[in-house]
Length: 260
Image 1 (cartoon, one colour):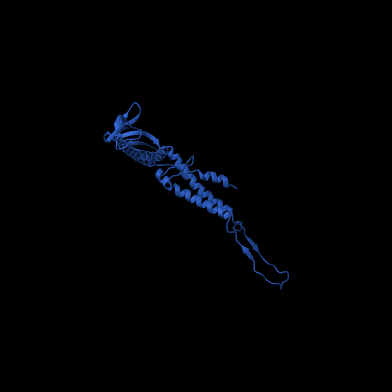
Image 2 (cartoon, one colour):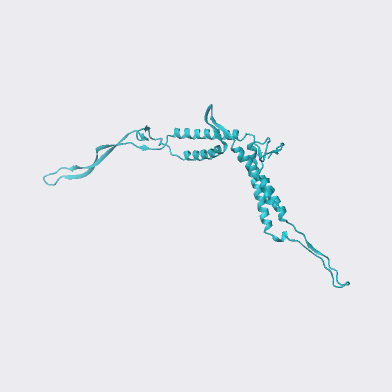
């Protein structure tokens, strides 16, 4: 984060040239560095031998007794230093968080599509939530089925669904018929063969209904969602370009915490 060049004003506020998008850009790095520092400290305090030291000297009972060299083990880790390092990392993170959150309360922008302003003074936090919302909306619309292109459809405002053009189909019925293969004589009866003939008995008229979308309507919706996403993104960039006042929070908290 750019360090302000002016004095801290009452209330832990310092003026500077930092922009909100700069704070947002380093937020993940600062959180990651703090998490790594916390993890490293946690691992160190699980090794009590690093916190311990000893110094031993040998004094023989008699002057002509064996002379043994002194023994010593230095303390490698002190909790005071670990706490100071922890406080420094948390202080940086807290200062960045309050700076960003305070700026977010002021950061606003209009949502504009072409020359039309759809919404004014939308907070940047709302714009961030809207961005994800419209990503999900695009996914949902993309999965929606469209009307069967093999049919002709018309919208029925009464029922709120689409109706296909009526299509007629013939209903038939098998009717038995007799076919005389050989007429009767005075010596032999007639030879008759029975068969079935399909005879039309009526007509089916079919109308299909559908709650799906026309393909061109679905495409239009997807394009408009994408246009709105771009407008929201541009609004976020404008909102995030405001200058922020660097706030300080961690110092006061950890001065109190670590005071003797």
